[in-house]
Length: 379
Image (cartoon, rainbow, N blue to C red; front, side, top):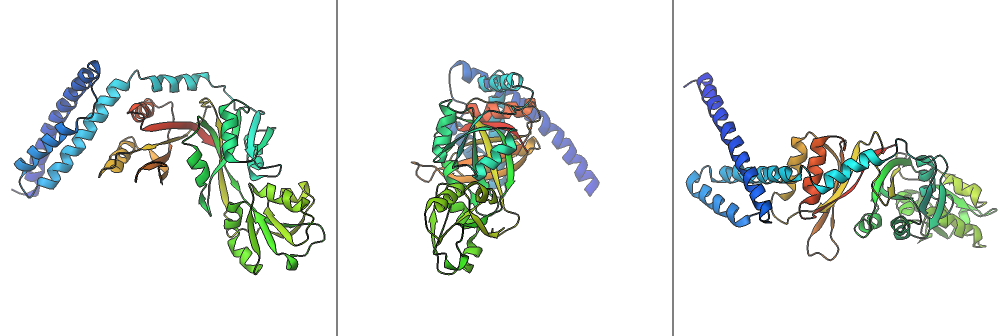
């Protein structure tokens, strides 16, 4: 047999396999509906184990591993197909469709917004990117911003979630587990830090520098040039500036935005002191209820996966099949869980796409393992 003849034989086998695959999936859909009528779970680990043991025995030692991978993949595809059939009129899909049609055509120009910090905070600068004129209420910490939105004290909240230099804002991601919210917009704000001093103070006499912990991390190299100075943390960079302005000391400085110099009557001792010029912080704008504005092209979800080999791979395969580009994948230890992890996904997709809505219905309704965080655009 030459190559041409072998390929013809493979083509014939592929056609037979496709026909059998379609029939197998069809029968899986039938079983899925029967399970739903009897309120039985889609997952049946014992049945899968029984089939895999049979396949392992019958495939022979040379093909045993390959056969297990093939049939394990078939199981996942079949379960996914069953869930999709059951999700066609699912609650979440309908809710998502309602959000698409029920949201205003334009993002509001003004609204009551909660931010962490005080005037001059980077969160305020981000709010000014989101809104033409935001009515801002300032809170002491990130948790209070989440609560203000959840309790309807503010329609929106603005929060940082990651920085290009210092990474994820861990506290915000941890708080996501505790609060009801939806992301409605995001932006990347270039962060330019400055060293701010009280009027008349000299940089050579500085004994203490105060800022938010992220600001200190992002200016680590500059801080080394100051010698043996103490660093202290504040709730925000702007709060650090306010503390310095009211301290009555001339040996203390703040790392904050240039805007804070004018607000708190401080002098600029050094500008652009961040370690990297490409220092960006990503901010999200959150609301209590889902709002999906025209042009939304990013979706965020979070959830847990079974602690077994291939669980993440099988989930990623669902995105790959739809040609979806994942822009962020991060795992964090789940509080209160023993070696359990929470996964965060950002991906590029439109909620208007029926295939994407079905995927979200499948993930969100699958035992509550995933939570839909929002569909939005980034400005």
